[in-house]
Length: 197
Ligand code: HEC
Image 1 (cartoon, rainbow, N blue to C red):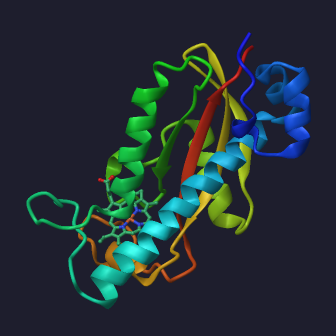
Image 2: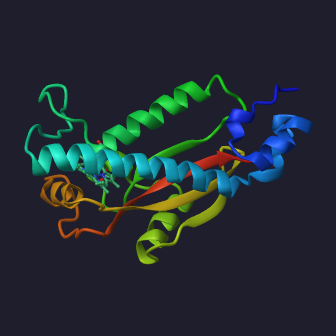
């Protein structure tokens, strides 16, 4: 049985439950897999927007202090927002190996990828990316079985929230799409959580 950690729950209601029940039971009672995916996405998307607006857009586009470049080491530049996101996803994958209860993966993809590696691969990814691009403001949820394992898969729109998003993609030689406007859906975040079958 795990020790109760009220700091993890953060809410008084949960604290009461926490005093009487093991943490695992409290969590199972209160958080669905969809809620967990939505919460993870909220954190990812907020961090991504803050990095883009307060670091990349401000320092590279407005104040012209430093550039953002995919070759950030050679160019002594800021890492791109998509690289920032991927480095986080890679670190999560590595750290969660040691946490069997915390098992999920995520990636940033697009139907119009600058990097072909970021194109959707599974049927759910393809349908989800198309759905969030066609239905602005809506998310896409499904289940899929990959390699014998069942997953809950959620896809969320990734939107051009700052002028730099649109400017850089439209100007990039490898971008298959050059007519992005601010506020357009430019791709999507895919979150995948394994389910007990
Ligand atoms: C300075 C250039 C630049 C800026 C600014 C930028 N991107 Fe990108 N973006 C790229 C590059 C280059 C890649 C491919 C990175 C990789 O190798 O995975 C990429 C990847 C992506 C992807 C994954 C699919 C793909 O195209 O490979 C999405 C979605 C995306 N960016 C959306 C955005 C959004 C939304 C913003 C603003 C919040 C943004 N980008 C800002 C250059 C940029």
